[in-house]
Image (cartoon, rainbow over all chains, first blue to last red):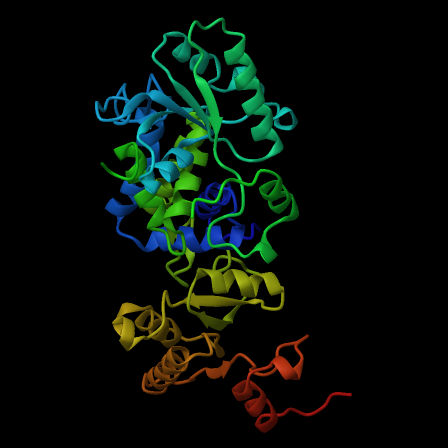
Length: 206
Length: 206
């Protein structure tokens, strides 16, 4: 006999446990919680994911998730369309938007180059970035990818592609400032970050 | 503008975050993971919960979740139908089954009496337990509820109900052994458990 008293229950637990970081005990707890909800709530729960998958649109400019062909950021006249911030994914756009410090537009790669995971330049939105820049009107590309080896590789690849694109007015390419996080004790900052912060020290704006 | 670039995405995140213990950041991560899966997988994910809610059956004897009118335990001729273990929920049945130490049948209350949460005796399967016992053929009721105040209250209530049911042959009522968990250091056992273990000490079976 199966560990579960019902095949329907087992299938629901299997699906819940397929989510990353959700173990089988947690999955069972979540499924039994759902089962205690009224039927319309369970239908709304299930329907939200189906609808998202079937109806989601990706912005034709920046490739961010959107409800419309052009996302709210790309269609806003108040944003600076000459500055493009290149990010790995949707969460990164939301994180930068939450800072309230950025007024340009985005380009969502949908991943970063990672030979270990079999992700090459063709698997992410790099061609569309080069094409977008080729149309002109872009003054600056801000590379805001993770500060990992894969992020550095992708940064370098994008930089080379833009250099070799034969642009009349190539945009300035910048990257996020790296250093000791604000509010961090030096004692708890990793050695590589701390070392580079000393080498790349900046003028003190007393 | 909403924090999310898409209303569909926001709705899916709201639904995921409605699960107990799932915060909004985790919910977003899980939803974006789902969105990266092929459409049939997302449909299977959503469908599993809808199907469970719409098609689940509760065993007419023990009220455990089941695929059939009588669950595998209640319909098994190899189980001892004269011994009924009373538990709070489905997980408890699975936990006891996993021990491989129990050969009787179950009665799933679907909750315990908790005035604080507005759960009274009528909200859980106590009437059906008394009715089941009244039919005769039950030698022992094992109360296996949580060792909390609510569990104790529910134990006591069931005990009184069975006493007052006017049964010709009232079943013996027992409860799970309580004491120091096996493998535990005394140092880390809570005082109440340790104190009661001394008072309720048992003969040493050298």
